Image 1 (cartoon, rainbow, N blue to C red):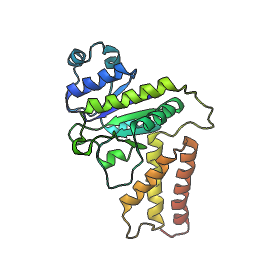
Image 2: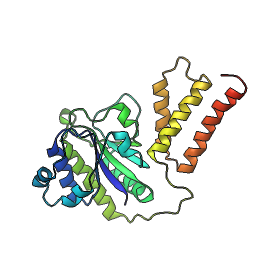
Image 3: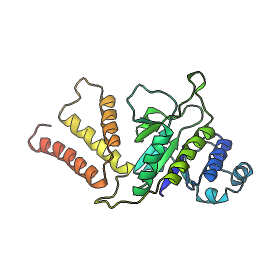
Image 4: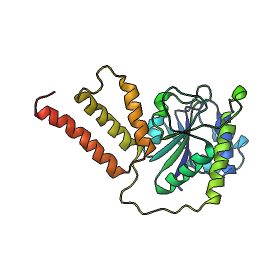
Amino acid sequence: MNLVVVMNNPQNLVNVAGVIRAMKNFGLKDLRLADPVEEIESRRIMGIAHGSDDIIKRLEIFDDLNSALSDRTYVAAMSARQRAAKRNMQWPREAAVDLLTAANEGAAAIVMGREDRGLTNDELDLCHRIVTIPTEPDYAALNLSHAFAVMAYELYAAREATEFKKPRRESIPATNEDLENLFARADDALHAVEFFKTRNTSHIMRTVREVAHRAPMDAREVHLFKAMCIEVVKYLERIGAR
């Protein structure tokens, strides 16, 4: 199962240790930290999450979230805040099944934002699904490690309940890097045909992202659509329309 846990810009080693402890409880092995605020001290972490040296040895640190997700084919983000932009929202139980399926077919990730502000809209743009834990509206905030423990439990329960078999595929899953390249070419093509005019560019491109994430494409399909976008721009240049 190719599933990693990603903490974006974590501020406190106590929370990192809390997440590692939950990972140990529920059989998750791979943790990535994107731009951590504190220096990672293994001794301090093991003092809170006893017996976690196997996870700490495998821990990877990245400069930013985009780098931490570049090789992932499916990404689910944990967020409690309601956003104005339309998002592909799920509760943990539903999200766990999709994450495990994606992890067995390709490379999946579950992402958490920093403790004080969560994930920004730009960071959520990198994710296929947004996972929200239902809570009482009057007291919705959950501690970071507690929220992750809920998600980790649902992943464990879904894994135990269902046997996931890797199906045959004609093409490998598309990575986040593949998708980001496609979105950039789509933006170029839409500008070339003057599609945006007075429309809000960022809102339109966010909708394009949501459509692509809702029906995840494999690498062959992403490359096909990227080639179509590139050819639109080249054709307009050939006929002197740009």
